[in-house]
Length: 306
Image (cartoon, rainbow, N blue to C red; front, side, top):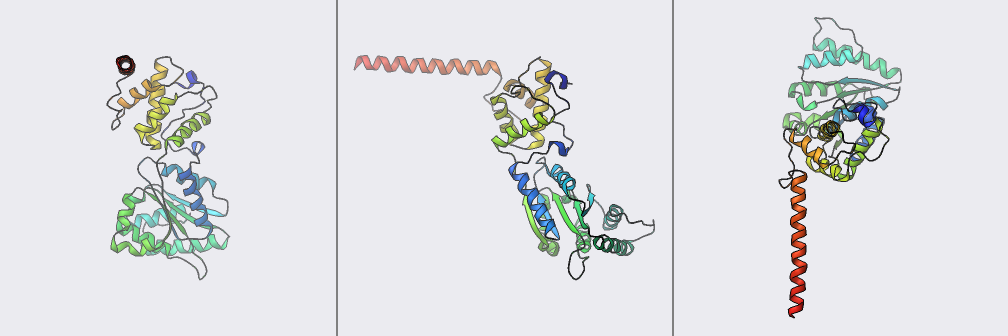
């Protein structure tokens, strides 16, 4: 709706993970580097944990996009599956043909044969599981059994888990200690800091085709970071709604007033209690000026009496 108004080629703050908008911010860059090192050294399990909206799925897709041709990747976005359904999903991702009557034993054997075939062809097999905190204990144990597949010299499959902090609490259970001990690399995605939030917003605008003057005022950028706590998904929501507000008013600059309207329209977010828009700001400025003048007058009067 506002693309033409702001000179954009596409929407900059969509919620669908799009690797074209991936920003190599420090926390995400470190996680991506760690993933590449872990896979290159042939580690079995790798774990990435982050709060809701911190960009796990986008990082996951960025990893899949940059792995070279010597990697064969399998991706399961929704692992809320029974052990049998997990084996079927992994088999399908690996290109294994199955029959409707196949059970766990048949899938295990077929997956093992396919992995040996892929590794013999010079490929490293990587299984990436998103939203891993949704897995049951039995399904996680089934996943561990898949990771057992190996030759005398190397692992046949490497497994990367992306999940919310609930995944850590799930893996802390005593009956999952065997799987927990196999996680050789792990990383926690941080929220964006103030400077990185600014870079994130400008990067997405630039990627969407914006090349004009500063679109978000400095106050607007600072406020976005404060109300979103640096969570990328919330940054996207607030910025999108603020641009809609600016567009509706015919403004070319997104300012703090537009951010306030966006926050008001977003459940779970709020501005500071002292902020109520331009009128409150004007009243606050008037009060400060009155206090300053009063202070100077009182100081001058005291000097004369002395």
